[in-house]
Image (tube, rainbow over all chains, first blue to last red; front, side, top):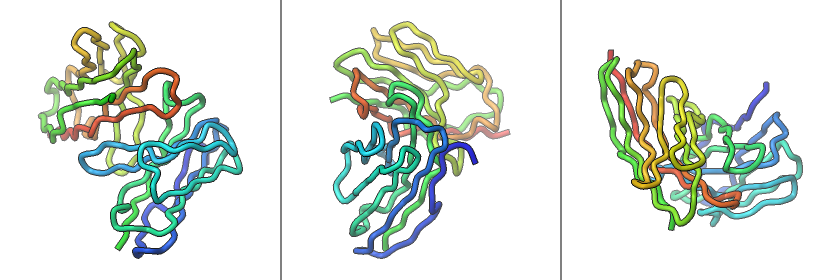
Length: 113
Length: 113
Protein backbone atom coordinates (compact mmCIF):
# COMPACT_ATOMS: atom_id res chain seq x y z
CA UNK A 1 0.00 0.00 0.00
CA UNK A 2 1.19 3.49 -0.81
CA UNK A 3 1.62 5.95 1.99
CA UNK A 4 2.91 5.77 5.51
CA UNK A 5 2.10 2.89 7.81
CA UNK A 6 2.77 2.13 11.45
CA UNK A 7 2.79 -1.11 13.34
CA UNK A 8 1.51 -2.24 15.67
CA UNK A 9 -1.56 0.00 15.96
CA UNK A 10 -2.04 -0.96 19.60
CA UNK A 11 0.46 -2.28 22.10
CA UNK A 12 0.31 -3.09 25.78
CA UNK A 13 3.56 -3.78 27.55
CA UNK A 14 5.02 -3.81 31.03
CA UNK A 15 7.44 -1.48 32.72
CA UNK A 16 11.02 -2.33 31.89
CA UNK A 17 10.36 -4.18 28.64
CA UNK A 18 11.83 -3.14 25.33
CA UNK A 19 9.34 -2.11 22.68
CA UNK A 20 9.88 -1.23 19.03
CA UNK A 21 7.39 0.74 17.00
CA UNK A 22 7.70 0.46 13.24
CA UNK A 23 7.19 3.11 10.59
CA UNK A 24 7.32 2.59 6.83
CA UNK A 25 6.76 5.06 4.00
CA UNK A 26 6.58 4.42 0.28
CA UNK A 27 7.23 7.92 -1.07
CA UNK A 28 11.02 7.92 -0.60
CA UNK A 29 10.69 11.07 1.48
CA UNK A 30 14.01 12.24 2.90
CA UNK A 31 12.66 13.36 6.25
CA UNK A 32 10.96 11.23 8.83
CA UNK A 33 9.75 12.16 12.29
CA UNK A 34 8.48 10.57 15.48
CA UNK A 35 6.01 12.44 17.69
CA UNK A 36 4.13 11.60 20.81
CA UNK A 37 0.66 12.96 21.46
CA UNK A 38 -0.51 13.54 25.01
CA UNK A 39 -3.57 15.39 26.24
CA UNK A 40 -2.84 19.04 26.81
CA UNK A 41 0.53 18.88 25.07
CA UNK A 42 -0.34 18.60 21.42
CA UNK A 43 2.38 16.79 19.52
CA UNK A 44 5.97 16.77 20.71
CA UNK A 45 8.88 15.74 18.55
CA UNK A 46 10.92 12.81 19.83
CA UNK A 47 13.44 12.25 17.02
CA UNK A 48 13.76 13.07 13.38
CA UNK A 49 15.87 11.97 10.45
CA UNK A 50 16.93 14.00 7.44
CA UNK A 51 18.14 10.96 5.46
CA UNK A 52 19.25 7.38 5.89
CA UNK A 53 21.86 7.10 8.64
CA UNK A 54 21.20 10.69 9.81
CA UNK A 55 19.13 11.15 12.95
CA UNK A 56 18.80 13.87 15.56
CA UNK A 57 17.01 14.56 18.80
CA UNK A 58 13.82 16.49 19.10
CA UNK A 59 12.14 17.99 22.14
CA UNK A 60 11.63 14.81 24.21
CA UNK A 61 14.24 12.16 23.21
CA UNK A 62 15.04 10.65 26.62
CA UNK A 63 14.26 6.95 26.86
CA UNK A 64 13.97 6.48 23.09
CA UNK A 65 16.33 5.21 20.41
CA UNK A 66 15.94 5.44 16.63
CA UNK A 67 17.74 4.13 13.61
CA UNK A 68 17.39 4.62 9.89
CA UNK A 69 19.32 2.16 7.81
CA UNK A 70 16.90 2.46 4.87
CA UNK A 71 15.12 5.55 3.60
CA UNK A 72 11.69 3.98 3.92
CA UNK A 73 11.92 2.71 7.51
CA UNK A 74 12.28 4.59 10.77
CA UNK A 75 11.77 2.37 13.84
CA UNK A 76 11.44 3.83 17.33
CA UNK A 77 12.62 1.76 20.28
CA UNK A 78 11.78 2.23 23.92
CA UNK A 79 14.73 0.51 25.55
CA UNK A 80 13.10 0.10 28.97
CA UNK A 81 9.51 1.24 28.90
CA UNK A 82 8.14 3.42 31.69
CA UNK A 83 4.57 4.37 32.53
CA UNK A 84 5.25 7.95 31.48
CA UNK A 85 5.78 6.66 27.95
CA UNK A 86 2.15 5.65 27.70
CA UNK A 87 1.01 7.75 24.77
CA UNK A 88 -0.05 7.78 21.15
CA UNK A 89 2.94 7.78 18.81
CA UNK A 90 2.82 9.23 15.34
CA UNK A 91 5.34 8.80 12.59
CA UNK A 92 5.47 11.38 9.81
CA UNK A 93 7.43 11.98 6.64
CA UNK A 94 8.16 14.96 4.46
CA UNK A 95 9.95 15.56 1.21
CA UNK A 96 11.92 18.50 2.55
CA UNK A 97 11.59 19.11 6.27
CA UNK A 98 8.96 20.70 8.45
CA UNK A 99 8.35 23.74 6.26
CA UNK A 100 6.52 21.57 3.81
CA UNK A 101 3.61 19.29 4.46
CA UNK A 102 4.23 16.41 6.79
CA UNK A 103 2.32 13.20 6.10
CA UNK A 104 1.33 11.35 9.22
CA UNK A 105 0.77 7.68 9.86
CA UNK A 106 -2.32 6.43 11.68
CA UNK A 107 -0.56 6.24 15.04
CA UNK A 108 0.33 3.57 17.60
CA UNK A 109 -1.43 3.61 20.94
CA UNK A 110 1.06 2.34 23.52
CA UNK A 111 0.12 1.48 27.08
CA UNK A 112 2.82 0.72 29.62
CA UNK A 113 1.54 -1.06 32.73
CA UNK B 1 10.78 30.37 23.19
CA UNK B 2 8.35 29.92 20.36
CA UNK B 3 4.84 28.85 21.28
CA UNK B 4 1.35 28.36 19.93
CA UNK B 5 -1.80 29.04 21.89
CA UNK B 6 -5.22 27.89 20.79
CA UNK B 7 -8.59 27.44 22.39
CA UNK B 8 -8.77 23.87 23.61
CA UNK B 9 -12.47 23.32 23.52
CA UNK B 10 -14.29 21.10 23.15
CA UNK B 11 -16.30 23.20 20.76
CA UNK B 12 -19.79 22.00 19.89
CA UNK B 13 -21.68 23.54 16.98
CA UNK B 14 -24.83 22.80 15.08
CA UNK B 15 -24.57 21.94 11.41
CA UNK B 16 -24.28 25.04 9.17
CA UNK B 17 -23.01 27.22 12.01
CA UNK B 18 -20.04 29.54 11.60
CA UNK B 19 -16.75 28.29 13.00
CA UNK B 20 -13.84 30.22 14.44
CA UNK B 21 -10.94 28.56 16.20
CA UNK B 22 -8.48 31.07 17.57
CA UNK B 23 -4.74 30.60 17.28
CA UNK B 24 -2.05 33.00 18.41
CA UNK B 25 1.67 32.50 18.35
CA UNK B 26 4.92 33.75 19.76
CA UNK B 27 7.99 33.59 17.54
CA UNK B 28 11.25 35.44 17.29
CA UNK B 29 11.43 35.48 13.50
CA UNK B 30 9.11 34.94 10.56
CA UNK B 31 7.35 31.62 10.96
CA UNK B 32 5.31 29.61 8.55
CA UNK B 33 1.90 28.78 9.98
CA UNK B 34 -0.19 25.65 9.55
CA UNK B 35 -3.51 24.14 10.45
CA UNK B 36 -3.61 20.36 10.67
CA UNK B 37 -6.75 18.29 11.21
CA UNK B 38 -7.04 14.91 12.91
CA UNK B 39 -10.16 12.87 12.24
CA UNK B 40 -11.10 10.20 14.77
CA UNK B 41 -8.69 7.28 14.72
CA UNK B 42 -6.41 8.81 12.10
CA UNK B 43 -3.16 10.71 11.86
CA UNK B 44 -2.92 14.41 11.24
CA UNK B 45 -3.50 15.87 7.78
CA UNK B 46 -2.46 19.28 6.55
CA UNK B 47 -5.53 21.48 6.15
CA UNK B 48 -3.92 24.73 5.05
CA UNK B 49 -0.83 26.83 5.49
CA UNK B 50 0.54 30.36 5.04
CA UNK B 51 4.17 31.29 4.76
CA UNK B 52 4.22 35.07 5.07
CA UNK B 53 2.26 37.95 6.53
CA UNK B 54 -1.17 38.63 4.99
CA UNK B 55 -1.19 35.31 3.16
CA UNK B 56 -4.51 33.49 3.28
CA UNK B 57 -4.54 29.73 3.31
CA UNK B 58 -7.72 27.97 2.23
CA UNK B 59 -8.94 24.43 1.71
CA UNK B 60 -12.26 22.55 1.93
CA UNK B 61 -14.11 25.77 2.85
CA UNK B 62 -11.71 26.57 5.70
CA UNK B 63 -9.67 29.77 5.68
CA UNK B 64 -7.00 31.35 7.85
CA UNK B 65 -5.09 34.61 7.37
CA UNK B 66 -1.57 35.17 8.63
CA UNK B 67 -1.78 38.33 10.74
CA UNK B 68 1.64 39.49 11.82
CA UNK B 69 0.37 42.57 13.64
CA UNK B 70 -1.79 40.47 15.96
CA UNK B 71 0.39 37.31 15.76
CA UNK B 72 -2.69 35.30 14.90
CA UNK B 73 -3.81 32.63 12.46
CA UNK B 74 -7.47 32.02 13.27
CA UNK B 75 -9.27 29.22 11.46
CA UNK B 76 -12.73 29.96 10.03
CA UNK B 77 -15.43 28.18 8.10
CA UNK B 78 -18.72 29.67 7.10
CA UNK B 79 -20.90 26.58 7.41
CA UNK B 80 -19.69 23.48 9.23
CA UNK B 81 -20.82 19.95 8.49
CA UNK B 82 -20.99 16.87 10.68
CA UNK B 83 -18.00 15.54 8.72
CA UNK B 84 -15.89 18.44 10.05
CA UNK B 85 -15.93 16.90 13.53
CA UNK B 86 -12.26 16.45 14.35
CA UNK B 87 -9.37 17.88 16.34
CA UNK B 88 -7.68 20.92 14.80
CA UNK B 89 -4.04 21.78 15.49
CA UNK B 90 -2.38 25.10 14.85
CA UNK B 91 1.37 24.86 14.26
CA UNK B 92 4.36 26.97 13.32
CA UNK B 93 7.80 26.43 11.91
CA UNK B 94 10.54 28.96 11.81
CA UNK B 95 13.80 29.55 10.09
CA UNK B 96 15.68 26.75 8.45
CA UNK B 97 15.62 24.34 11.34
CA UNK B 98 14.45 20.93 10.24
CA UNK B 99 12.88 20.07 13.54
CA UNK B 100 11.53 23.31 14.92
CA UNK B 101 7.81 22.76 14.51
CA UNK B 102 5.61 23.76 17.40
CA UNK B 103 2.09 22.35 17.66
CA UNK B 104 -0.68 23.85 19.71
CA UNK B 105 -2.62 21.57 22.08
CA UNK B 106 -5.44 21.01 19.59
CA UNK B 107 -9.08 22.06 19.58
CA UNK B 108 -11.75 19.39 19.52
CA UNK B 109 -14.77 20.22 17.35
CA UNK B 110 -18.06 18.35 17.40
CA UNK B 111 -20.73 19.23 14.87
CA UNK B 112 -24.22 17.98 15.64
CA UNK B 113 -27.01 17.59 13.09
